[in-house]
Image (cartoon, rainbow over all chains, first blue to last red; front, side, top):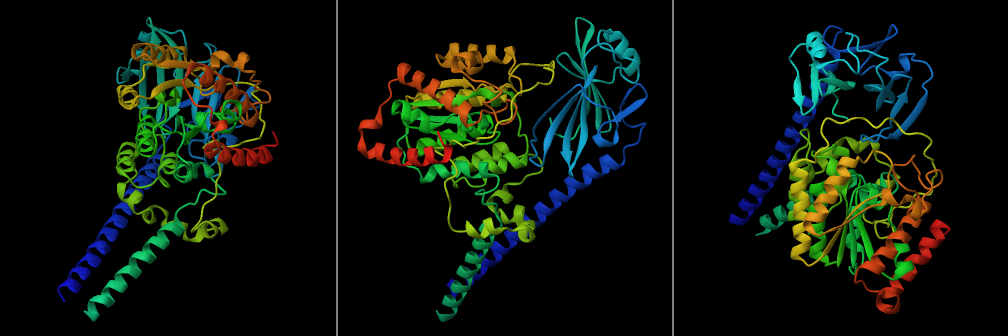
Length: 178
Length: 335
């Protein structure tokens, strides 16, 4: 009888562990999904950085095919970290657009400047001084060595500054995919 | 007593049904996403490898132990997995040493650039089918992304319960059996996708490898020293993602400081004979079968000439197994 009692207790403990683990797992998944969903849907144009080239807006996270950017000069693709498609890199004359796959479509992950013939929407380009960067974007940046990052919502502009001159500019969409 | 037996039977049934459901729902990695089966295939292999490779896809796609054996009689195994991170390589090496003690461990340093887990999907490919052990537990702890939980690894049903309506023939066919998808850890890919262009080599804010990756590289180095194993650091000849000169210098410095050999195969592409218009299946990220064959022959010669390794071709107990596998390998590859 005592042994039977122990067996029942063991079954109850196992059941409780499973129920607890299921609950924890579900909660964690829902929290993550909600966070990402809310962040994406709550974005509006004032809350994010948007790159604009000759009047064509390239919002980060937007579906690439909806942007009508024309024929790229070059194209490269690699298997995505998330498996469900390819990370794609479209090279235009003055910048590269990197995309990541989501729900069967390609979304803009980053825009990387290739030269000083293109400027951010706010007018900063490669070769400008750090003073100009601070004048335009302020001093509310995050610094990692030579990199200065400004964040708005899920979007970022990253400048690399060497000897007081900007040597690299990149718009980035923060979805945890590098 | 009778009541106790009844409860015991019910208890056993519950556990059996739980285990069966668990196994049914877990991906089998046999016909699709075969990369997920590679870590576990090692357990069924004879443990007589004098060389063990550890690292990411740059080892399992680029080095063929069958070619190395055929060229030199040296036995080797690739314990690689997709996006294998530093801490994963360390724990896989620790686990390997419980089964056998190789003379040489070859570690591909590409993962030094990653100082945190990249994605759950990659973790699953490495961890799902690994045998339970202290090393697996520690590896899960070190590898989990913020969204993952230890419980979902202990009870995979928590992660895969939604696969109920996605089960395929593969899930039932391989419920109780496995098949070999690799040749000693080498995954064959015969496709050809040439390198036609490469994206711009981006400037990085910081080229310094992180403390965490160095700490695990130290652990790998020390584990090899403690076990009298020669550690060789390599960089496979993948042209993308870019391997920066600053990365290379750090590894060379580390190798010099610790008395290790470091070979960056990107420096020897012409000597190896790699042609990126024919020898890669994905525009330069990995070599295909033809590129891997060239690289394996090249590295086999280095192993033969520079390390004290055994030619097992005259040892029937080992050779018979390799001859059998080589026959299958030649049939499958057509080489």
